[in-house]
Length: 98
Image 1 (cartoon, one colour):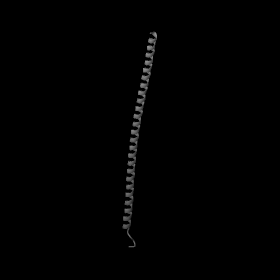
Image 2 (spheres, helix red, strand yellow; image 1 turned 90 degrees about the horizontal axis):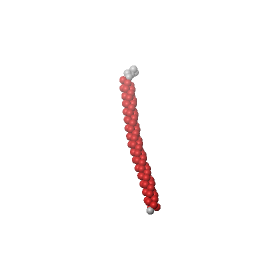
Image 3 (tube, helix red, strand yellow; image 1 turned 90 degrees about the vertical axis):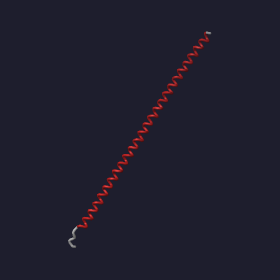
Image 4 (spheres, one colour; image 1 turned 135 degrees about the horizontal axis):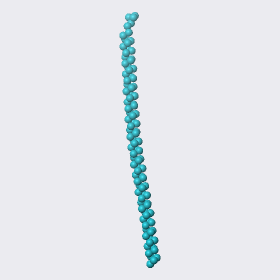
């Protein structure tokens, strides 16, 4: 009988060791899942930030292209007006020999 009781105590200790080991493993698995969720969340945030920066860069490029186009148009207008004034000036120059 003493050996049976001793065996039962042994089994009880073994079972509690297994349950503690199982609890530890479950806790480690839970922590690992939490780390993975946090990592995925950080990656999503970084991806959204990268996309937003790309959009902002594209807007800046478009604005700069528009500014350049407007400046080119103004420059062409000045050239055309200058040419027009030159033609008007030539046609109104008095001719001494005429």
